Amino acid sequence: MKVLIISDIHANYDGLKAVWEKEKDSDLILCLGDHVDWGFYPHEVITWFREHNTVCVAGNHDHETLNAYDKGVRLPTDGSPYTFQHYTTSRLTEEDVAWLRALPDERMLSIDGWQIFMRHYPSDNDDKGMHTVHASLLDFSTVAWCDKEWEILTGNAPSHFEKRLLLFGHTHQCQILQPGCGYMVVNPGSLAYRVCSDSIAKGADYIVMQDGCFTPHHIDYPVEHLSAMVDRENFVPEVNRPSHVYFGVQT
Image (cartoon, rainbow, N blue to C red; front, side):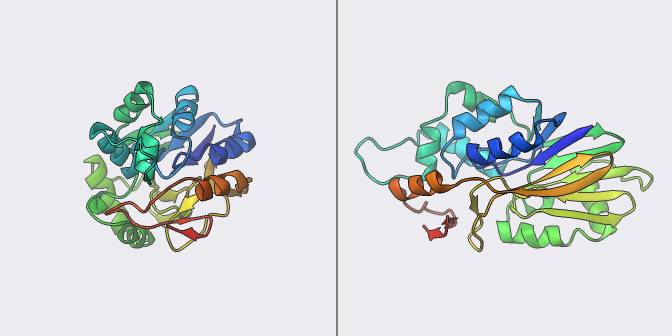
């Protein structure tokens, strides 16, 4: 069975299409959240996920988008500057919103002998920032950390005679770790052209799981028209949300 593992799409339909063109023989797609926000095609991305064989969990940007939608955040009608939240909420249909609302925060499933837990980020980082999460993921090299996380997330004591896979996204950095005792910890990276503020996106990262092997992949795709949209649109930095880089342009 071939499983495509992706995360942090951020409404980047171009990146999603480029990956799928290369991996369209996948039997199943797992997505670890942040389907929308900070991108130009939220409706198209959600439609794609609804039309394919996907298992998804919600990310923090999915929740933030729903909160903004419920508060009535929409594109201003007077031509004044706007944020990506204004942009995103104004392009969602009722079906899109319903799909986002139905996303669970976590899932468990079994594939090819692996007990798999999916969540956007680790359990003890719910109220912490991205950089804390990133440092935490780097610490996943210990079996004790994984044991603690597995029990917190699943409510079950881990068995070291099972193959257990912890899937996380959020950091936009591709990782495949094998701490031992049956654990694998995987972060597929991001398909977004928007990444964290200390880096500039140069393509899409993802992971393929097949025949018990986990393989990282990177694919480039044309971003010129996306860059032009960034230059053309009347965006402003969002209050109480971190500044980010768009094609090397700080906003």
